[in-house]
Structures are given as C-alpha cells and as structure tokens.
Image 1 (cartoon, rainbow, N blue to C red):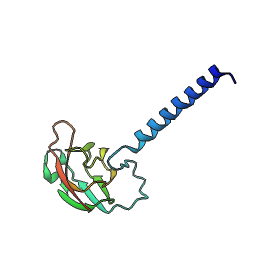
Image 2 (cartoon, one colour):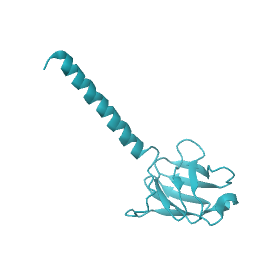
Image 3 (tube, one colour):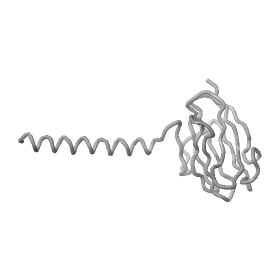
Length: 135
C-alpha cells in the first residue's frame, strides 16, 4: 500500500473511532445513568414518585420531597402523573432523570456526595425536590 492510501485509511479509521466514541458517550451521559424504558431489571434503592397533578405543587409534587441515599445507589423517579415531566438538576452535578412520560420511570445512579436540588423544567411547572447523597 502506498503512503497516500495508507494515510487515507488511517484517517478514515480515526474518524470512525471518534464517531463511535461520541455515540457511546451520548448513550451513557454523565453524572449518573438514566433508564426511561420501563424494562425493569434493576432494583432501585429508593423510589421518588411524581404525584398526580404535580405541575403546580412545588415541593409537594414529589413523594418524598426529600430523600437520602448513598453514593452508588439507584434512585427511581416514577411518574404517577398523566403529564410528561423533565426532571433536571438545579445545580451542576445533581440528579438528572430527564424526560419521563406519564406512567413511566427513569433511574439515576448517585455519583457524588452532597445535597442536590432538582426541578421540572417544563414551562409553568413549579416542582422541586431534594436528594441527599451520603458517602
């Protein structure tokens, strides 16, 4: 193989590795993991429920409003409301369950110790909660 063809093949292989790596990073996310497919298979250490009619209930939108777990524990956010909610951290590094349709759930693995506030980011929703993560 001549030098020019070798460089082209090496460049194509390198670009392919970057594309695959970006895809894997996009699937795994950061700051914990999330599973919105209701396949189960994982037993959560804790379950937080979004209550029916949660969109305007503030801290009462989540049951419990504050929960405590340890690093490495799985926390399930169960949406018992008919509406879709987007549960995001209020500060960088906090729990991120993402978009959860009515009747579905998402799992988050606690990765960092601290007291983490979270909220629903859907416009006009006033929902907030707190997750305390111990070592």
